[in-house]
Image 1 (cartoon, helix red, strand yellow):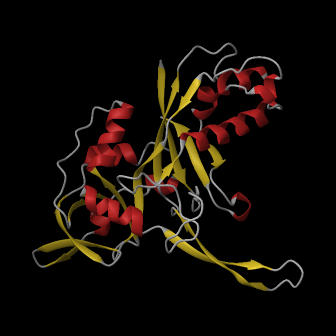
Image 2 (cartoon, rainbow, N blue to C red; image 1 turned 120 degrees about the vertical axis):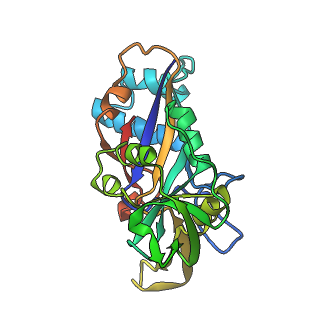
Length: 281
């Protein structure tokens, strides 16, 4: 099987909705249950890429598109169902931007996130031991030094700095995409404990307030106030794409995604959400 990693870097806030909620957030994003990390489901990735390549081919019924993405009874009429040739994995969180008292923001990650990427991408990079809670490894752009003490302040919390973020991981992560923002993040990387990273990934997402407009009056609907959760810009995700069977008409998906593409994921694309840089690693 031919196995690739698809990197997705959010250029604008991303909302892959989880439906209605009984909590404080009316429209939450999808998350892993055990870590609370934001995710992009494989079904969303498949749908976006299918639409992208259907547009390139000029038809959703193109033979190459159906071969790679599969077809259902609506597309095949009386013909049998056909499974696609590519298996789309869930996009898991690798880097999450967090507000920093120095340097504006930090690019946070954890040993769990790095170990997942190391395993899936088969990287020959060593993952450092997990820092203790309220401790981290950090780049100099976000470190505050006072006498003999060194720390970072992320959101409202101070963390002690035990050392520098690993240079080999910094070089790799900043170069997975030809994106000026990601490449300029050198010195901003922070390795957190798994628990601390989970806290920020769950509580440092953007929550925007919205009002529903009455189409007749053009004013706010009195009962239409709601809020919406989004993953902030400058977050990095990684998903596995696996070619499970040889395609009959070539593989334009892998060929096209070797060059960076601008794709829109999730909801509210017409209001600017979900635009991501995408590239196969």
